[in-house]
Every structure is written in structure tokens, then in C-alpha cells.
Length: 637
Image (cartoon, rainbow, N blue to C red; front, side, top):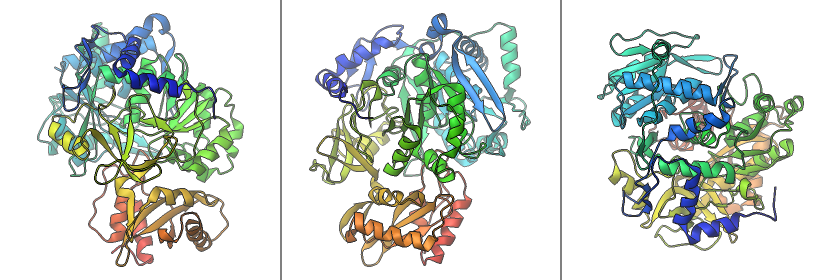
């Protein structure tokens, strides 16, 4: 995976010497209704805006412009093992579906600048809805399907949508989740009420419609199609919002991350070829959900802007039907590049540690695996390298940035790998590590990771109707920088090491220690499938680390034996300073639906603090299991 011919340093230096010229060149890959008067204005918005004066349409660039040259090519392949359904949608068909749905939205009174909330499962109609909003200049806000009514209501109140697009149900594994009752309750709880809702009835569960408010999706689309009503692409300012995506806020009030149209297109188009190394016409798969930023950037917009075929997968990495699910999709659809969370590969490794299920599939088309969303432990990366025999690329970014901050740019020729590091900053980003006083620290010294302003195209210009909150959260902590709220260090080669959120740095008797570093050690044990380390209160040392581990299938060692070995291993690799004396075997770890481990909630349970059920949790029962295990060890209050 290493290369002596990487163009990364040359390209990064070119960007650094002329940032505006670099992004002006990248912008030539986009079709503009009117080019920008000014590439960047540092005085616009809270921290500057890109492509001032330009007019554009994201749907046109993602769909319409490809139809003359690749109209018959697959734009989206829908693969749903949970329903046994597959569907291929060409670019020409996608244009027809999106233009027709956009006409339906206009019939519902949706105009440029209006907000539309989508509360959808992983079905093609979710992508049609996003693109239809973009087509007519409406601002979409996708809320992960199945979110609790209270959480959905807070997002409705903040976005104040003109309309809501939803479906009768979603499917989680073998379980049908009725969405419509959740939506009805959310609307009853919210102060802001949508004028109308468009409901897609799935065959697994049909729901009743509220008279005067709800419309049947299929009926409305059929009427528009019969009348040959299709909406054209409405020009919008490059600085106009394309979407608002809510991410959890520390105050309990979600933060509406704004994404603009122009900079978003330029950045995503640049990453498809230069970062992921994918060519137009090839099949790209981001195994995520449209409810998360990865789904926005790399299921829908990035691949379509680049003229690729995108995979829309409704299923899990294991259990639909087994731990070979991903191999089937790659082999069947000719996927060249997969982007997923490390959690998915840890789940596959746990169920099939020797990758026996891989042997039944031809993956000769497959070129690279990209991992992001949570720290990729070296053991998982190396396991994936061994079984797949392709580059496995860890990279790091955030909902707020919309595209990779740091990574190993395959399209520029990969740099040498350092396991545990997502490599180096991408063009557009200058990364620094600062101490609590805001001063730069020496190489290999832990601190807060920040990005020097201005942020590149595609990053959030602000929060929805909350400029001051944006400044307080991201700009005020370190003037002149964007605060990532991640902790880590830069090494002597400029490689970034992201060791966890700043909250995950624990203070053991005055020593600032990374829980991520300890997790790396635990994950290296051959019996461990996945793990999480938290700091728990200690009267003597302030905090001490506690490690939770899930063992691989087929492990014959006793839990006690493995736990003892893990304590010794951390002592050997990190030293007595870590004060690591507690390893606890559990059946599974609590996670969000996007695969992030809920370390903060686990810590509150262990410390006996008041805690609430996270809105994004995948299975609430797991927290009860964790609580029982902790009580058995004399923790949990």
C-alpha cells in the first residue's frame, strides 16, 4: 500500500501556495449557471464563504448533466437483503423519478428556500427526495429513520419544514419498525407544523393517512407522471444551503449543520478521483445510511457528481444473512471501492475471524477499502489487509466538514502507512495541535486538534439560524482556528493521530492519557473482537481506566484469563502510569445506529451519574446489560 510515486506533497504544496487558485481549478469540474465573481470572501458569514456570486444547481450536476453521455448507465443500485429486493436505476430513470417528485413537491407548495424534512428508510425514494429538493432549491433535512418522536420533533421545530417526506416503515434486521406512528407523535409534539406529509407505503406495513395533511407518495407521483409534470432545475446561489443535517449538541439541543451548494459540489467532486481514486462509470459503495453525513456525501452526492454508480444497501454487515453479506454485494455488483465504519469490520471479524465466508466470492474487481466514522484500530486494519489483499485506508472527518480532513489519498498515490494514524491533512486543511492555553505543542505531544481558518469549500459555513452558537462552539475556543473537539497529536512526519474526543482523554493522577491508545493495545489481543475504554471516577487518582471487551466467536480461553492478560498487556505497552487494572468482558457494546460506541453514556453509568437514553442508540437493552455487569464489579454508583 505504500508508494514512492505519491503526488500528495506536490498537490498539497500547490494548494497551500494558492488556495483560491487551487479551488478555482477544482470548480471547473462543475457546471455553473453563472461562475463566481469571487472565489472566496473572508468577510462573508462567520468565517468566510466560497464562490460568491455563482449560480448553480446540485441536482443538475448530479443527474441531468450525465444523461446525454451516460443515460443508460446505472446511477443507483438498490440492494435490500432484508426485503429480498434489488433494483437498478439508470441516470435517465433517475432524472425522470427526481423531476416528477420535484413537481409533486411544488404541487405541495414547496418553493426555493423552503425546508423539507425526510424521515426515511434506506430505499431509493429517500435519494429521490433529497435530489428533488435540490432540484427546486428547497433545503432538505434528513432525520435518521426510526429516531424517537421527541428527537424528530426538536428537529422539526428547528427546521420549520413546509413538508415532510416519510415512509410507512423501516426494517432493522428482521424487525419491521413502524415509522408513521412515530412521525404522527413527533408532529403532535412539535410547535412547528408541516403543511403536508408525503408517505411512501411499503408492502411490509401500510399505515393510515391523516386526512387533509397526508398524501400517498405513489398516487401523487402517478398523477404527476400522467400529466407529464416535471420540475426543472432551479438556479440557486452557490452560498445558498443545500441541506441542514442535525448532529447532537452538548446542551441537548441538536446543532443544524448547514451545507452550501457550490463549495459542497466542488469539494466532493475533487475527493472522488483524487482521494478515493475512483473513475466515472465505476461502482462505489458507502455502506452507511442517508441519515448520516456519509450517506449525504458518499451514497448520494459524491458518486453521482462524479458519474459513478452508487450502491444503496438496506441491510447489516452481519446477519443479513451472515458475515459474508458485504462480500456478496461487492462481487455481485462489481464494487471497486467500499467505504464503511471500522465497527462493521469488527463485527465481521468477530463472526468470521478466519474470513471463511470470503472464499465463496470473486472480489477481483475490488481495489480499496476506506474506513472512517470511528477510530480504526491497527488490528482491524491489518486483518482487513490480510483477508482482502487491497489497500485499507483509515481517514478522518466530521459531520461538520462534510468530506475528509485527513487521509491517505489513493488517487494521488498512497503514502507509507502508519497503523493507527489516518495519515495527513488533505489540501484545504492545515492541522495543528494546541495545549489548553492555545499554544502549539511539540510533535508527539497530546493536545486539542484544530484546523487553521479559513475552512475549505464544503465545510459548514454556520449552524442553521445560529451564527452565535456556531462561533461559541467552533471558533471561540481557539481564535483563528476551528475546534474539532478531537484530541491527539502530530508526529515528526506530519501524520495526525486522532486518539478520541477531547472528552476521551482521562486524567490519571495528573497524567493525561488517551483511551484510544489503550483501546489499541486491547484490540491487539488475538481473542478480542472489539473494545472500549472509559475513565471512571477514583477517589485517589481522580480517574482510572476501565476496559470493556467483546471476545471473538470460538475463543476457548476463559473470560478471566483473557482479562488478566489484557491488564498485563496494557502495563507492558503503556506502563504502570496507565493504572489499568480493570478489564471487563461483555457480550456486546452499546452503539449508535451509525456504529459509534456510546462511551460517554457508559462512563455515566459506571460513575453512578444521572444519564438519559441516547436518541441514536441501536439497542437500548445493551445499556442495561452494561449496568448489570458494572454492578457485579462494584461499579455503577
